[in-house]
Length: 139
Image 1: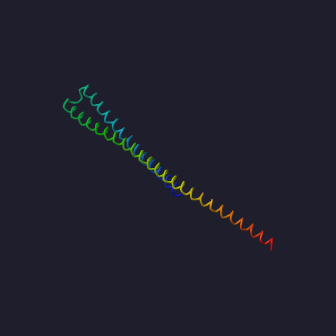
Image 2 (image 1 turned 30 degrees about the vertical axis):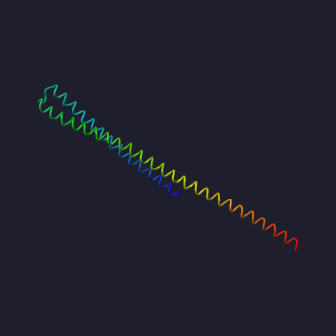
Image 3 (image 1 turned 180 degrees about the horizontal axis):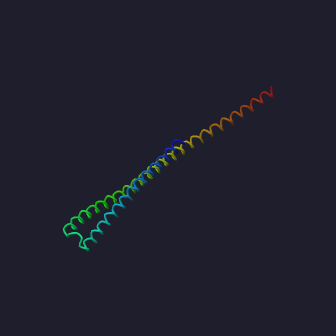
């Protein structure tokens, strides 16, 4: 039971670490998305000021928008994985806890039955001792 408890604690710590790493990775993706959005804004400003040609601006903008769309999709998928991973860990821990609880209930029932049997044996031995005392007294 102690080993099982330690195993549960380790599993929960592991799930927390994985969730933490996945969350950090998602934040990095968010920062990259923000960087691409800033670059698109900067290109728009440069175009307004006539610093780059329209053709170059369109090419750069298309590249950045494509990369931005890809990063947003990856970020969305990553967020889904984080939720799924945490949900799976919780379900696994609940199943493990239920299994442990069922095993403890069965063990408790067995112990109660053993206690009843032991109480019956004690009562029988007390009755036997009483009879022996009575027989010894009559001798």
